[in-house]
Length: 337
Image 1 (spheres, helix red, strand yellow):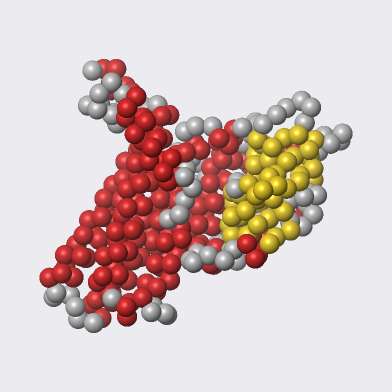
Image 2 (image 1 turned 60 degrees about the vertical axis):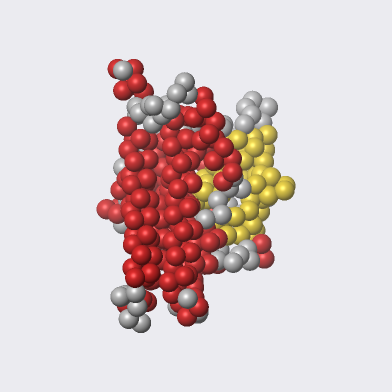
């Protein structure tokens, strides 16, 4: 698989957030598996923008625009973990595996985190692997047997034996987990998910028109609810992006707001799928109808890590405030009052 990357279509800079989220939503509407791959690509490039040296930015950005390299972020540890052992020559020997590695061996520049094993420095280190210059990464395809999102090819990858130089290390140890960048990144997959919900609405709309069910009052009510749910999701995405970019909100406030957006967009997607199922009936969920595939893909893609912890963190933030009158106002506005 390869994705045509046009420089005019994506900014590597993290300050063009709303344009990037709109792009992710559009790709998710067309294909959730491609949206998942592209979200990882964008995630990696934004991490480069935030933590890379000027030389690294130049090199890695040019590998996208000129070399058509596809990046990704693989962070989920397998049981053996991933360790980076510092060698006497200053290079690092990797050992261990990751799971849920979207794109598998089609990703030419995977960004992974590895626990440093070094006498001088400790922590979790981001590394970007130049796949054509190192030993082949072993992949286990049998790991990936999902209900949906089958085309995203999310394999188990074993990095044992790969040697990296210091030039392949991105940022300082533990930079990957710095807030608010780590948690606020959820808004990217939310955008892809909302694109999937838009696809559900579009397919439902077209199918009902094709079978002349548009005059039914119940169908009108369901299509109306799907429409305003998706527009509500759009407003959540835009408002979250504005808060991230304004620089006027504390980290805890931003994270809580992103988690609210995440929860609301998940509910939006689930409700839209339920309304669609009731509207189109069994005939709309038969293969090879697009709705059958979109429902499977979106059901799987909505299963993101720690949804309960995300919800609890919102309540934790609210209870830490003296009252609920100015929960989401900027810190500057609060000071002026």
